[in-house]
Length: 445
Image 1 (cartoon, rainbow, N blue to C red):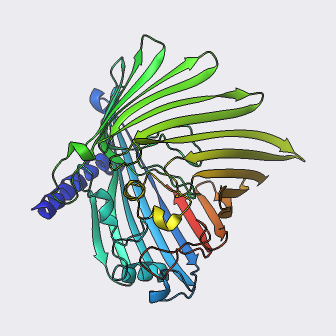
Image 2: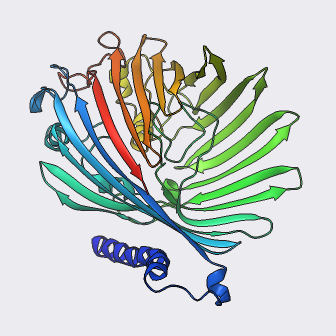
Image 3: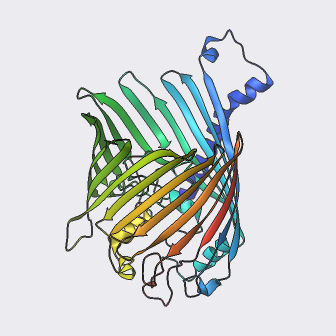
């Protein structure tokens, strides 16, 4: 019954998306009556992108990939995204984003086979993309074809209506929300945050929610959210899996402040953030306290992030630099045991936690070799090990509507360190710490 309902929803949304795109087709084929007042007051913005890429992935011989082979693998990737914004008036518009993905190659095939070896431990890299929507109010993801050689799937990543009364904004539907001041790690961002190692951040994954924003008499802005979710097993709406959150943004002299409170997956989350300037550099910080559902020896834990960034010119070139420190109060020194911690695994499964350690010092530097060609270097370092990853990558604006991105990720650290590879509990295998590289071409239209 659930599958049938989801199929019906996908068909209805497809017709709705076609309706959004229809004004473009109608204008191109038949023309519009310029004397029609309603038509004159509407606008339709259509666009999208096509991405074609390749990933080269390495594997350690004693990693959990050993049962399916550890030879270096090549994967092919393709993604198309179509978006449409249908503006009815100054106070009302609809927006929808459709995307389809194709993946094939060695890494995909290994992940497919690994489901038979480690069905409960794929570290968030399962081959079933529809799993990301199982908790959401609507399952708008559908796998079109999945074999051991390739997978083809599509989804609606945005689908919302925006109403703008005189006092603020109301947005209902699938949308993306970003809170917090972290630039690499972002503990205040509770809703599908980017992973610290994500170098391509074009679009954040959307959630089904209601967002209300309004100004207050205290010269600040208040944002309220309700994110309904389902129980994965029963498929029923479950308030214990849902989120209710609020954030108040205001100024304290020259400092921008954020106060955040949420009831998130049946846990209380409180946050305090700030941002300002020190001379010519910008700084940001967030302090987040979360309670624990399964906590036995403690009732909650603290997360803290602070960063500073600065732009400068040297020898005729533009530079940008960032340094960030992040503390994870849920972190452990023994990473094998960390994977047995239900609190940590819950947050990894939800896509909220990306580090098993306690303290991280990260940095990024950008150099503009040419206005159309920039090179970057990311370093994410676990202070306690030490271990980490190094990510050099480049972005070339090939044409006005296309870019080429390429780079690599290199892990460093001794065995039993977080990024050097540690033993997976109950097995003789380690986490994979081998390097990988990517190449991606994107055309925007």
